[in-house]
Image 1 (cartoon, rainbow, N blue to C red):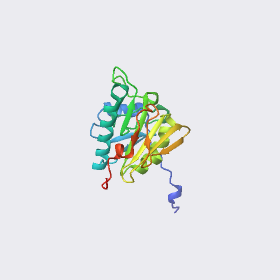
Image 2: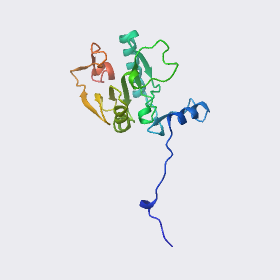
Image 3: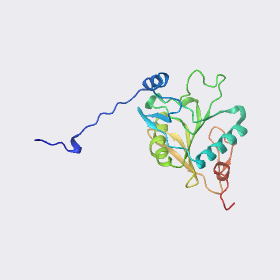
Image 4: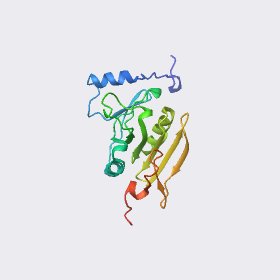
Length: 198
Protein backbone atom coordinates (compact mmCIF):
# COMPACT_ATOMS: atom_id res chain seq x y z
CA UNK A 1 0.00 0.00 0.00
CA UNK A 2 1.41 3.36 -1.05
CA UNK A 3 1.85 6.01 1.58
CA UNK A 4 1.81 9.73 1.11
CA UNK A 5 4.59 11.85 2.54
CA UNK A 6 3.96 15.39 3.85
CA UNK A 7 5.93 16.75 0.86
CA UNK A 8 3.44 15.12 -1.54
CA UNK A 9 0.36 16.63 0.07
CA UNK A 10 -0.82 19.75 -1.68
CA UNK A 11 -3.21 21.96 0.24
CA UNK A 12 -5.34 24.31 -1.79
CA UNK A 13 -6.28 27.48 0.03
CA UNK A 14 -9.36 29.42 -0.86
CA UNK A 15 -8.40 33.01 -1.59
CA UNK A 16 -11.06 35.65 -1.13
CA UNK A 17 -11.59 38.69 -3.29
CA UNK A 18 -12.46 42.07 -1.85
CA UNK A 19 -16.04 41.49 -3.04
CA UNK A 20 -16.16 38.11 -1.23
CA UNK A 21 -14.85 39.76 1.94
CA UNK A 22 -17.37 42.61 1.79
CA UNK A 23 -20.23 40.17 1.18
CA UNK A 24 -19.20 38.17 4.27
CA UNK A 25 -19.35 41.38 6.30
CA UNK A 26 -22.73 42.39 4.84
CA UNK A 27 -24.14 38.90 5.47
CA UNK A 28 -22.98 38.94 9.09
CA UNK A 29 -20.53 36.06 8.64
CA UNK A 30 -17.85 38.46 9.82
CA UNK A 31 -19.12 40.76 12.54
CA UNK A 32 -18.07 43.96 14.23
CA UNK A 33 -16.39 42.02 17.05
CA UNK A 34 -14.30 39.89 14.68
CA UNK A 35 -10.81 41.37 14.70
CA UNK A 36 -9.76 40.34 11.20
CA UNK A 37 -8.17 41.82 8.09
CA UNK A 38 -8.03 40.66 4.48
CA UNK A 39 -4.34 40.22 3.60
CA UNK A 40 -3.56 39.03 0.08
CA UNK A 41 -6.83 37.16 -0.20
CA UNK A 42 -6.61 35.50 3.22
CA UNK A 43 -8.64 36.44 6.28
CA UNK A 44 -6.12 36.99 9.05
CA UNK A 45 -6.89 37.38 12.74
CA UNK A 46 -5.41 40.54 14.22
CA UNK A 47 -3.15 40.39 17.28
CA UNK A 48 -4.60 41.29 20.68
CA UNK A 49 -3.90 44.86 21.76
CA UNK A 50 -2.03 45.42 25.01
CA UNK A 51 -1.76 48.58 27.10
CA UNK A 52 1.57 49.75 25.58
CA UNK A 53 0.07 49.47 22.10
CA UNK A 54 -3.13 51.25 23.14
CA UNK A 55 -1.33 54.04 24.97
CA UNK A 56 1.03 54.69 22.05
CA UNK A 57 -1.85 54.73 19.60
CA UNK A 58 -3.87 57.11 21.80
CA UNK A 59 -0.83 59.41 22.08
CA UNK A 60 -0.37 59.44 18.28
CA UNK A 61 -4.08 60.04 17.69
CA UNK A 62 -4.11 63.07 19.97
CA UNK A 63 -0.82 64.41 18.61
CA UNK A 64 -1.85 64.26 14.94
CA UNK A 65 -5.40 65.46 15.57
CA UNK A 66 -4.23 68.53 17.51
CA UNK A 67 -1.30 69.44 15.29
CA UNK A 68 -2.88 68.79 11.88
CA UNK A 69 -6.43 69.96 12.53
CA UNK A 70 -8.30 70.10 9.20
CA UNK A 71 -5.23 69.24 7.09
CA UNK A 72 -5.87 65.49 7.36
CA UNK A 73 -8.38 62.97 8.63
CA UNK A 74 -6.81 60.86 11.39
CA UNK A 75 -8.28 57.36 11.30
CA UNK A 76 -7.67 54.65 13.88
CA UNK A 77 -7.81 50.97 12.90
CA UNK A 78 -10.06 51.69 9.93
CA UNK A 79 -9.96 49.77 6.63
CA UNK A 80 -7.89 50.82 3.66
CA UNK A 81 -8.84 49.09 0.41
CA UNK A 82 -5.88 47.84 -1.63
CA UNK A 83 -7.40 46.21 -4.73
CA UNK A 84 -4.02 45.65 -6.42
CA UNK A 85 -3.06 43.17 -3.70
CA UNK A 86 -6.50 41.75 -2.74
CA UNK A 87 -6.24 43.25 0.72
CA UNK A 88 -8.10 45.42 3.17
CA UNK A 89 -5.82 45.97 6.16
CA UNK A 90 -6.78 48.09 9.13
CA UNK A 91 -3.64 50.06 9.96
CA UNK A 92 -3.32 51.28 13.51
CA UNK A 93 -3.32 54.87 12.31
CA UNK A 94 -3.69 56.45 8.90
CA UNK A 95 -3.62 60.06 7.80
CA UNK A 96 -6.17 60.42 5.02
CA UNK A 97 -6.60 63.24 2.56
CA UNK A 98 -9.45 65.48 3.74
CA UNK A 99 -12.78 64.75 2.08
CA UNK A 100 -16.15 66.34 2.81
CA UNK A 101 -17.94 63.00 3.15
CA UNK A 102 -15.27 61.53 5.48
CA UNK A 103 -15.21 58.47 3.18
CA UNK A 104 -18.75 57.31 3.96
CA UNK A 105 -19.07 56.44 0.28
CA UNK A 106 -16.30 53.85 0.51
CA UNK A 107 -13.04 53.03 2.21
CA UNK A 108 -10.01 55.02 1.12
CA UNK A 109 -7.52 53.57 -1.34
CA UNK A 110 -3.76 54.10 -1.70
CA UNK A 111 -4.09 57.54 -3.34
CA UNK A 112 -6.11 58.77 -0.34
CA UNK A 113 -3.48 57.82 2.25
CA UNK A 114 -0.79 60.30 3.27
CA UNK A 115 0.78 58.15 6.00
CA UNK A 116 0.22 54.75 7.59
CA UNK A 117 1.52 53.97 11.07
CA UNK A 118 1.63 50.43 12.39
CA UNK A 119 2.26 50.17 16.14
CA UNK A 120 3.83 46.85 17.00
CA UNK A 121 4.15 45.12 20.31
CA UNK A 122 3.35 41.46 19.73
CA UNK A 123 2.69 42.19 16.03
CA UNK A 124 6.01 43.91 15.15
CA UNK A 125 7.26 40.96 13.06
CA UNK A 126 4.00 40.67 11.12
CA UNK A 127 3.99 44.41 10.47
CA UNK A 128 7.58 44.33 9.19
CA UNK A 129 7.53 41.14 7.12
CA UNK A 130 3.94 40.96 5.85
CA UNK A 131 2.23 44.35 5.98
CA UNK A 132 5.17 46.56 4.99
CA UNK A 133 5.81 44.76 1.65
CA UNK A 134 2.05 44.72 1.05
CA UNK A 135 1.83 48.50 1.52
CA UNK A 136 4.83 48.98 -0.80
CA UNK A 137 3.25 46.88 -3.58
CA UNK A 138 -0.01 48.82 -3.20
CA UNK A 139 1.81 52.16 -3.53
CA UNK A 140 1.20 53.58 -0.03
CA UNK A 141 3.63 56.53 -0.06
CA UNK A 142 4.87 56.35 3.51
CA UNK A 143 4.67 53.85 6.38
CA UNK A 144 6.05 54.23 9.89
CA UNK A 145 6.70 51.12 11.95
CA UNK A 146 6.62 51.88 15.66
CA UNK A 147 7.99 49.05 17.81
CA UNK A 148 6.97 49.83 21.39
CA UNK A 149 9.04 47.01 22.88
CA UNK A 150 12.28 48.06 21.18
CA UNK A 151 11.34 51.77 21.37
CA UNK A 152 12.12 52.31 17.70
CA UNK A 153 10.43 54.23 14.91
CA UNK A 154 11.38 53.63 11.29
CA UNK A 155 9.89 55.60 8.40
CA UNK A 156 9.66 53.80 5.05
CA UNK A 157 9.27 55.87 1.87
CA UNK A 158 9.46 55.55 -1.93
CA UNK A 159 7.40 52.38 -2.50
CA UNK A 160 8.34 49.87 -5.18
CA UNK A 161 7.72 46.22 -5.95
CA UNK A 162 7.36 44.80 -2.46
CA UNK A 163 9.83 47.13 -0.75
CA UNK A 164 10.50 50.73 0.13
CA UNK A 165 13.62 52.34 -1.34
CA UNK A 166 14.19 54.63 1.64
CA UNK A 167 14.13 53.81 5.35
CA UNK A 168 14.90 56.34 8.07
CA UNK A 169 15.27 55.32 11.72
CA UNK A 170 14.42 57.97 14.28
CA UNK A 171 17.37 58.46 16.62
CA UNK A 172 17.15 59.62 20.24
CA UNK A 173 18.37 63.15 19.43
CA UNK A 174 16.64 63.56 16.06
CA UNK A 175 13.16 64.38 14.76
CA UNK A 176 11.03 62.83 12.06
CA UNK A 177 8.28 64.44 9.98
CA UNK A 178 5.78 62.87 7.57
CA UNK A 179 6.65 63.68 3.96
CA UNK A 180 3.19 65.24 3.52
CA UNK A 181 3.73 67.51 6.55
CA UNK A 182 7.44 68.42 6.73
CA UNK A 183 6.74 71.09 9.37
CA UNK A 184 5.49 68.42 11.80
CA UNK A 185 8.80 67.39 13.41
CA UNK A 186 8.36 64.66 16.03
CA UNK A 187 10.90 63.37 18.53
CA UNK A 188 11.01 59.80 19.80
CA UNK A 189 9.42 60.88 23.12
CA UNK A 190 6.55 62.55 21.21
CA UNK A 191 5.71 59.19 19.64
CA UNK A 192 6.60 56.70 22.38
CA UNK A 193 6.39 58.87 25.48
CA UNK A 194 9.26 59.42 27.91
CA UNK A 195 11.34 56.50 29.10
CA UNK A 196 11.17 55.64 32.79
CA UNK A 197 14.56 57.34 33.24
CA UNK A 198 13.26 60.66 31.88
